[in-house]
Image (cartoon, rainbow, N blue to C red):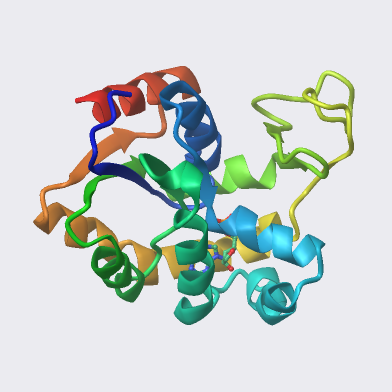
Length: 219
Ligand code: AMP
C-alpha cells in the first residue's frame, strides 16, 4: 500500500463468522500493515492468565462484550506501538458507538479511516462458526465444512491441535449475533454518515471477498 504521512486505519465490521479475521490476516500481509484483533488480544490475556484476562473471562465465555474502558485501554496501548505508525487493520474494534467515538477522538485528524462492512446472513454465520476450528498454537483458522484439516484434528499450518473456541458453541454464537445486532450494527449508519463505509459481499467465495477488500483499500 502507498502509505502517506497520514495513518491509514482500516476497520472491518461484520457479524461473527463473516470472515473478518481470516480476511484481515491475509490483507494485512498483502498491504504490509499490522492486523489488530481485540478478540485475539483478549484471548492472549486469557491464555497468560493476566489480571485483564481474569477480568474479561466471564464476559467472553458468555458471548457478551467486555466493558468499553477495558477494551479502550488495551487497544490504545497496542496502536501506540511503533509498527502501527503508518496504519493498521482493526478487526473486532470498534464494536459500540462509544468505542467509535473514543477512537475518533484518539485519532484526531492524523488518520484516514476506511470502514469495510462484511455483509453475511445469519444462516451462513451459524454454519461457518459451528464448523470453525482454531489452532491452539498459531491461531490459524480452518473449517470442518469449507477447509477441513488434511490431518484430522491438526492444523495445516503447524500441525498443532485444532480446537473449537468456547464461544463458538451454538448457544454462545446466537448470543454473540444478538449482541452484534444490538450494539455493533448501529456503527454501519454511524460510518455511512461520515462517508467512509464500503460494503463487501462476504457470502462470496473467500478469494472474491479478498479481491474486493484489497480493491477497496487501494481505491
Ligand atoms: P472476537 O474474536 O472479535 O469475536 O472477540 C471475542 C470476544 O472478545 C467477544 O465476544 C467479546 O467478549 C470480546 N471483545 C473483542 N473485541 C471487543 C470489543 N471491541 N468490545 C468489547 N468486547 C470485545
